Image 1 (spheres, helix red, strand yellow):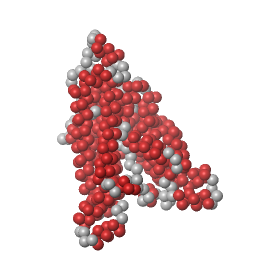
Image 2 (cartoon, chains in turn orange, red):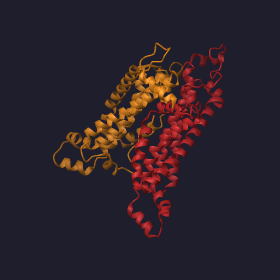
Image 3 (cartoon, helix red, strand yellow):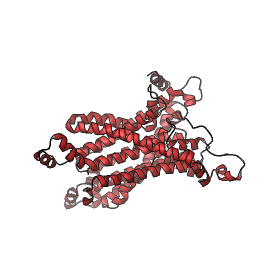
Image 4 (cartoon, one colour):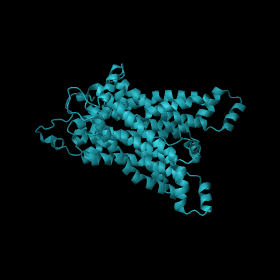
Length: 241
Length: 243
C-alpha cells in the first residue's frame, strides 16, 4: 500500500513532483476538468431536456427516444473520441462536441420515459380540474418525473466527467487525465493520486445531483414508488464509462 | 502508463514508395493498410476484445447472480450490495484501472483489467436479476408451492424462468458496457481494440487505424447486443405473445 500513501502525498503537494518544476497544479487541472465537464453537461441538458420532455408530453416518438438510448449504449467513448479526432482533429470545441453527442441520448431517453410514464389517471384528473397542457406539464408531469429525469441527468453527467478524462488519451490537454497520460513525469504515485481525484470528482458530482434531485422531488414521488410501475427490466440503468 | 506493441504498424510511414502515399498523407481511410494489417493487428485485437469481454461477463454473471439469489431470500443483503456496487460503478473507468494498478499483486496485467471490468457488471446484473425475481407474482409462487414444489424446484422451474427476460436484459447491458470499457482497458493491458486506437493516437494520430478500430468496437457492441436479443427470444418464447 506504499504507492497509495505516496499518492496521497502527491495530492497533498497539490500535484507537484520533486524535480519537475513546470507541472500545473492539481487544483488547476481539477478546475479544468470541472469546467470542460460542466460546459458539456450544460449544453447537453439545454438540447436534450426540452426534446425528451416534449416527446414524453405528447406521447410521441417512443421508438426514437428509446432506440437512441439503446444504440448509444453500444458506443464506446474512446472509439467515439478516436473517430471524432480522426475526422475533426483535436481541440476544446471537438472534445465538447463528443461529450455532448455522448451525453444527450441518456437525458432524452430518461426524460421521455419519465414524462410519458406519468400515470394517465393523474393527468386526466388534472385536465378535469381545468389545467391546460402547459400547466399539466409544469405542475404534474415534471414534478412526478423528477426522479427518472434526474437518473438521466446523473448518467449523462457521470459520462461527461469520465469522458473528459479519457479525452486526455486522445491528446486533449487540460484535465486530470493529463496526469494519467504522462506517467513519465508524474510516476505511479502521481497517476494514482490523479485517479483518486477523478474518482472523488465523479462521486461528488453524483452526490451533488442527488441532493438537487432530492430537493426537487415532491414527497410521494420517490424512485422506489416509480420503479414499481416499471417493466421487468427495472429502472433504466446507466451506461458506464 | 501506455505500453505499446513493438514494431511499426504503419508500413514505411514517411518512406518513399508510392504504394504508401495514402498512409503518408494520413487520409481518412487507406484500404491498403487495413488489408495489410488485418491479420496481424486488427483481427487479433478483435479476438482479444471478445475474450476480455466474455471472461468479465461470465465471472460478473456468476457473482451477481449468487448475490441476487441471496438477496432474494434475505432482503437485508440488497442494501449493502447496492451501495458498494454503485460506488464501484460510479468511479470512472480510467481512474479505477489506474487505482487497481497500484494494488500489490495486480499491476499492469489482464487480471487488473478483468477485476475492473467485472466490478462494473455487478450493479447492472444484480439489480436486474433481483428485480426480475421479485416481480414474479406471489400467486404463481403459491401455485408452485401448492403443486408440491419445494423452494429449490420452485426457484429453478418457476422463479428463474419468469425472471429470465430481466436477467438477460441485465446481461445485455453488462456485455455492451464491458465491450465499451475494454477499449479503455488497453491503457493498462495492451490488448483488445483499445490497443490499436491508443497506438494510432501515439502514431501521429493515424486516422485509418482510429476509424477502423473504433468502428470495429462499435460494430462488436451492436452485434453482441443483437445476438443477446436473439438469445432472449429463444429462451423466453412466451414473451413474444405480449409484444
